[in-house]
Length: 389
Image (cartoon, rainbow, N blue to C red; front, side, top):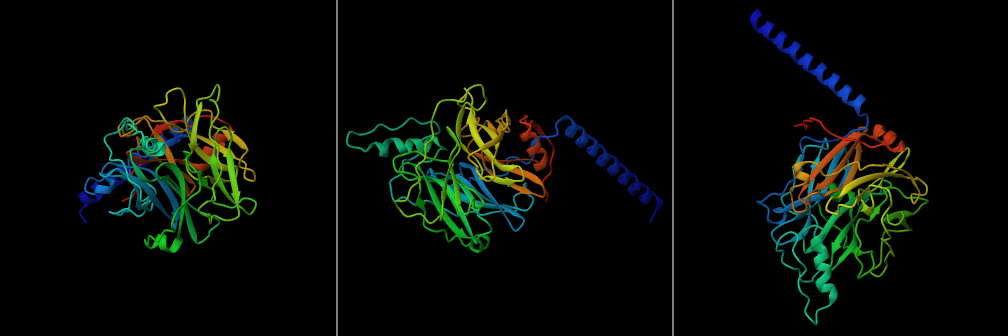
């Protein structure tokens, strides 16, 4: 090999080494300045609408995620030209880059009822006819306000309980109202893309609006645990089986006045299914201060044996709308965490951005927990993080 080529290669190697050392120094400096940073990926948004697919041409957001076989599987909410909310599927090996995304929906909630054609975001409720039932008029409007659709399945939260061979999924069912649906699928069928979902049941009471119900990924005191409200306190239903009858409902209450002296004055609901950690169940939740146009995300640790007990709660939001994709969409200013996993010691948090896109933020889990136990603020910072090709 000519000496000139060897010299060039040696020079390039030296330059590369210097760049790597510089990045390590910068990373260490950031860590010292902010040891608990929750970092948005520079690849955000990682899922966006696809105009070529009618069913997901308008909005793709609020993903449920599950870690299986060292891959992160996404079930994301999608709305297309007919205004119906369906669930799409994508998968990632590293949690940042999408390896595969199916061109068709993998779950639909069939109601057999009429739907209301979408007009535009923030439309007014349609006028009710004298002989029209109230539910036919008001509940579809609630459905529209909850994300821009007039029917279907919203905001999936898939979970595997105690390594069972079944995945359970709660979701908001736009079934002439907003109720909580429950379905399931065999793990093998899920991994092999055989979408043989069990017929859903509605587990919240009729004529009531309910959302954001989560199943714990582990039995507690030998019972399945369903978190169904966080206001005015954490409410959990313990059941022997997740096989509900058609008229077997969970009575849930969500109400009460604002929390005083806190950023999360108005609690909305729980986020991703709880993550079990050494310090407790890590739960993300949605809340607002006096600005109701902005959704922010909080975090709390719940007792492992009695998760109605809050051990620690972050004093400030851990995620709030700041980036352009979080403030430009169907609902500007909304960040909505609906999925979270721990992979290789890192906490990966997935969220809907302005009801239009999917984003991901991350941080070392141990550092996040230590900060949360001290009830300090996990500050958000930008960081260049290239997805694996």
